[in-house]
Image (cartoon, rainbow, N blue to C red; front, side):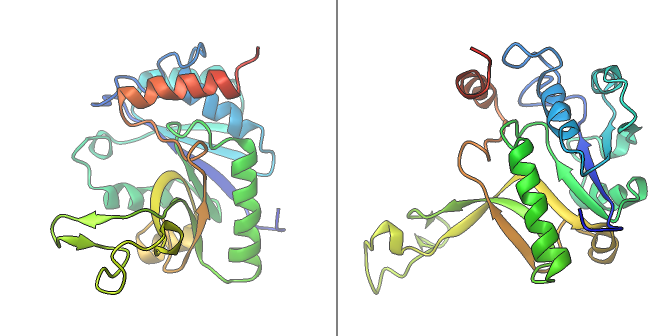
Length: 236
């Protein structure tokens, strides 16, 4: 950890998930406390970041977080107005630096169960080197590389190559695009206040493969994630 630079994890949840009921707290792959408990255990393994801020309006989340009885985990009850499906994300982003006082905010999601200790520590290493150390970038976000034929129905054309030059180029010759997978974001608190955003103006694109970037957003995702977890992580 770079001297005098303080990091904090920021882990938001809310009650009333519409697509996957209680997706953060329901039992996941035999783990009571579910994805939330799994993510908190992953974060507690990373000693370099002391504070873990859990932002929520969900009583189950509060109960699970407090059950750790660990002073590194701080539960901050979020205003209901910032927990609605209609909440404007920019309003929530602007709220975050009011409850996190660290120099750098490491925003993670429980719904990315395979962005584990190793992934998060590697991302932290890159951020310290590329953003703080060498100032090549001003923030970091996790992405998944997409290098396939992508067609815009609105524009009625491929968006990542020019068919007037080559109709069907080799896939490896296509322009790669990057899907923001929401596994994590790292940004300075100063940038949050300056840009009202969870990234700066020149973010480092931290690539994750399909497994480590897996995001649970639907019931099918939840079931598939359990299969993957039991295959890769569960004790035999």
